[in-house]
Length: 197
Image (cartoon, rainbow, N blue to C red):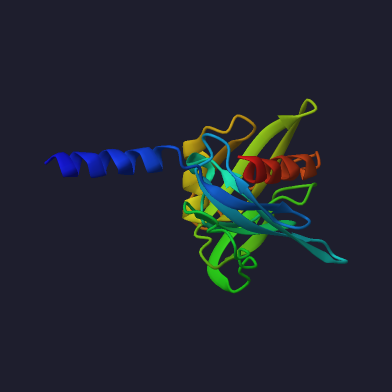
């Protein structure tokens, strides 16, 4: 009995002080880093911005809180992302895969800066339509698109103050409404949230 208690106490001592280590990088070389308190998961993400003239890809890896970590993908027309999340040391060594491009039959509205009546073919695991609204520089900004269920689950559970995000399951269920302001600020804010939280 004393041996079992001793072994248990040794286990607690060795694991209590263990901090998670993740690779961290953004647009450059990656380094191994010990995560700060409260950051209990490693994330690897691939972001692809799409424009008529060119596409650019950014790979990111970082420590994140469990409440803000999801494996899945999102497509808001001009920005697509794919991510995976894990919770063991250096588990984010591999780059997240490129966002999927094989259409899955689901359709959602997306915004192009002028209006939100454009339709987007969802791909891969993107089985929900997403809508985010926020106020930036006293202007209402709207972002819409396709998302995986896991992405929707994280945004609803995390209590993000920056944007009001909702997801729905039916085709084109995220509603068509026009907007007059550019939504690039909100896209950057969403990207920052997923990179920093």
